Image (cartoon, rainbow, N blue to C red; front, side, top):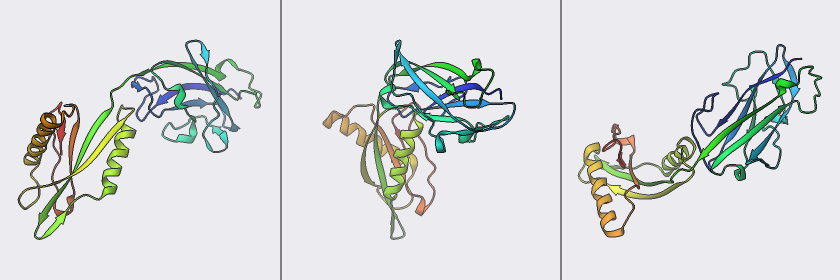
Amino acid sequence: PDMRITAIEVTQAVQDLNNSVDLVANKRTYARVHVSSPTSIGSVTANLSGERGGVTLFPTLIPGNPGGTITILTTPDRAQINDSFWFELPSSWLGTGNLKLTARLDPANAKNDPHLANNTSSVTVNFLSAAPLRLRIYNVRYTIGGTTYQAASSHLDRLESWLRRAYPISTLSVSRDTFTYPGGGLPNVDTLNTWLGFIKLLRRIFSGEDGRVVYYGMVDDGGGFMRGKAAGIPGTIAS
């Protein structure tokens, strides 16, 4: 066999093989070690080690793939998670600054690969400090024809989960409130954003709230669909 490492991809949600997408310190991070071979080879393992400032980090990681092994393919598909090795990086490795990762394919040479030089590869990535995202979610209650609508708590849970996973942040600080839309009928997004802006202004004046807190109105679509809109871009108010 002539197995080889083709790339080490370090990802927090969105990434390319050149690691051109910035990484945020102290956010859950995975490394994918992409490999190939002229012929398919089953039950191959690998490991991954880390280094900061010339100091080796512990432990040496084993793959998270089922059984810690994969079948190395001739034309692996990046969209298939188990066509590559994957490793979750320990939280202690994720501080601000450079991190060097070194992958070793078949470290014990159990497959008797005659060309070992391309079985080891390293990449250095940089973790950047990022401000936390402070979010105030308003679950908007409105009434149509005697029926009152508001989003289920599970919908708010999913919004928070998605933001934590997809956004370049390490911390999401969330508070939840309910806002009863005045008058009847489906909320108008511009009117709703104006109300949220007024509430935000009052909180800044009387509570000293940080102006960077993002206000987000969630409108359940049970009474009709309100197209979402930001009050301004960039801005801190949207529904």
